[in-house]
Image (tube, rainbow, N blue to C red; front, side, top):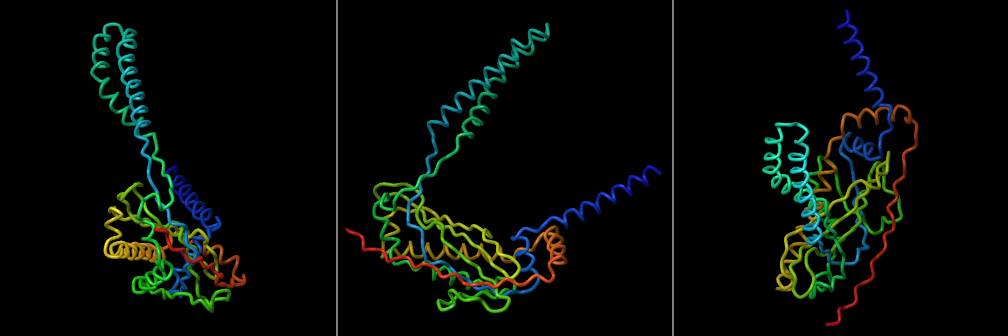
Length: 309
């Protein structure tokens, strides 16, 4: 009888859990994910033309602070081990002859572990510098049509978009509503620069970051995704050789990688929890009006002035 009641109670709890999950409001990202999964969608791609200023990001690993913190933690760990083994062992009487030698033997091991753990608590810090801090790198960023290149890279992923039809927004569509059930993928560059060292002919790598929002008829997921690329490092002189051919190729690789990440996110299947929550929401919002999606008017970045050589 008790076993039957236990099974019944478990079943009731399971039902309550499912109902509870379904009654929680769905996040906008969950709504968008479910909408994308219901059928192939038409998605317009709009990449903002305003770009962040090119900069070089360096990383301070704080080596001195790591060594100091590791040494302090290591010495403290070794000292406590000996203390517990020898001083604490006095309370055990004859066992002192066992605990003290064990503490002495274990002290170097505990100290080494403590040193590593202490050093790990010191976090590296990134610092941003003007692009000229990596001498000779500024011309690499001139004349790059980054917006058009990324838009083309995303649209070229059409055959991998799980049936979704991707197209670039036309300039004459800015400020106007998209037709029918078409969604809008709004992409903005958050970083376009270098990572590495500064100074004379330093070794640097290309870094590109974008923020994407996805506006669909049922929901607007402004923070839909963050996507980034960091390549391998070369000397600035290597990137600049042959009219920056290697750097131009690296930009193309970076944009293809980001486009692939974006499309993989579009293809993701929603979780069972998201499906339940969105289904419950639809029952209560069946008569809600569909949102009109208007393409924003993007700013045009002013042309860069020629560098003074």
